[in-house]
Image 1 (cartoon, rainbow, N blue to C red):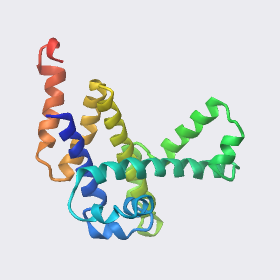
Image 2 (cartoon, rainbow, N blue to C red):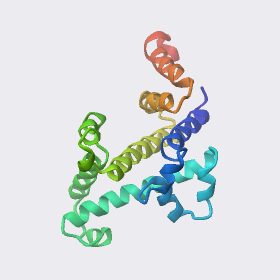
Image 3 (tube, rainbow, N blue to C red):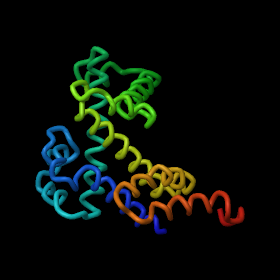
Image 4 (cartoon, rainbow, N blue to C red):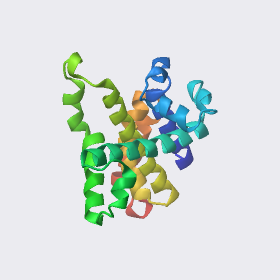
Length: 195
């Protein structure tokens, strides 16, 4: 398995989840609408068939914007009018870390915290928030995978592959099983010098 092809598979899984269905392109707060704002000339490319480079760029840019927006929401709840006002207050590093941790807990919860959100009564559910949380999780996972690949952190790539395998399966990709087998063989079957 080549790492570039793995990155392509990750972007295609995100495309399947957030863009393939035409209804996903009509949501006001979704991934597609964010990308239309960031790159209006390229948004039509996203709605057709899968193409790696536009999706790769879209996930990176829209993911960064979504994470900043999550921070903006928390900063405003904390009595600052904007991210700039928060920065102007010259917060200590531990305050910045606490804010980042709160953003992760609130906008990128662990999977075991998602079922109560998704299984609520229909009138109590916030589907836009659910979709935003899903995109935040996938875009952060994609950023982590890309960073690990770009910097040669193969152990982190292996760890990320475990999280991506179910997404490959959900996108109907046959290499989901092979991905899990590869990670298993690397850690439990191959001799130590090959790991």
